[in-house]
Length: 352
Image (cartoon, rainbow, N blue to C red; front, side, top):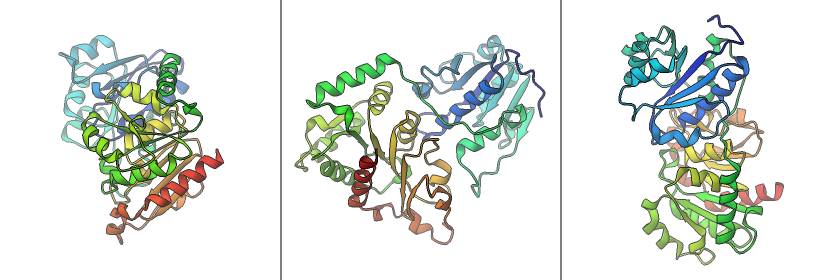
């Protein structure tokens, strides 16, 4: 156990330098900032991240400063000037680990997983296979040497102005009051649920559009294909397709939803961290499954669909399956039928 003074103004640096393409892993770190602040209320907490992930840290009341590993010309000099007392590296990478060492950070906590991990002076072994808990819990465990205990959950924060702009945008697009029954659907090429086709999401959207306001979210790279697909469904129109590459704008729009349906790991966690009910689709394999990467929330309004069955907060403990005996079954995401997802969403709407 590292002995620290509770009310001293330490400067903590939380390090997670993966890029945007690395699923949702940075969002799993956010509870750690709240945990540290709850045990060391006078502390300043900064992050070292890749700039593509900065929208996940905006407006966070627990964060003092943000450094970017891909834009700092002299990372060692920047960190030395910042006078970091304690660093926690959630994902080990050579550049940040070396910079922390050269910057003279006194306490450097990290996972002992690479040769350069010897530069951490507090090395923690965390075997992740077979998995035993959620990724967020593994990250929180790295704080135990600091005497930080307990469970905290990912949260994202928006300004009042961001929320107002999102409401105005939706009102301009839909004549009726949209945010009272808005369902957002996000088809994705995320590896999380490869094989569940975009047309399945569109089929669900078409069924729901007779009674609800539907917004299909996509990236500009999918504009042509999704616009053509839209024409195949009687109840879907151009106003139902929302195309954006602006991450902050997208988070604001998602915050207006009643339910968010997707197979995109990062956006599902963003929706959950904004307090939105989710319906998610997951593979169930040894390295990619909802027990480790699924929604981690204190709210009880999340449904998880896998080839092994349907799970919710009421039976999440039953989610552990013997995937080693039936690996192929866990990959058959196409076995989940759109009609089933539609009925689940319809029931979830009625319960809200």
